[in-house]
Image (cartoon, rainbow, N blue to C red):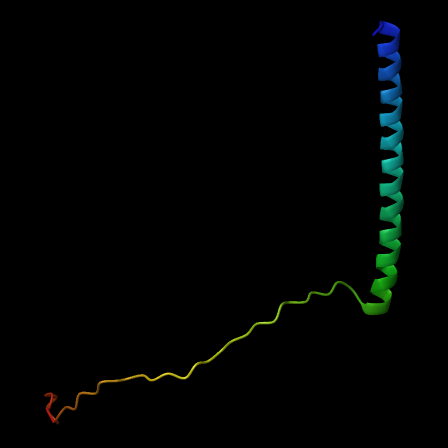
Length: 81
């Protein structure tokens, strides 16, 4: 491959890369402008930013609790019985 051919390929590649960068930048800018305009219109119709939280589920399962009670007499001594 000669130097002229290599230079031509690199020149075409560089021009193509710049053209794609320019096209991509213009698309991003136009999309951003449209998004801002639509966001304002939606906010006018439905209000500002809304947050929706996921639902929470709680399940109470019946269970038995066994409590040991010790009876005490008037003096505070544990009675058996």
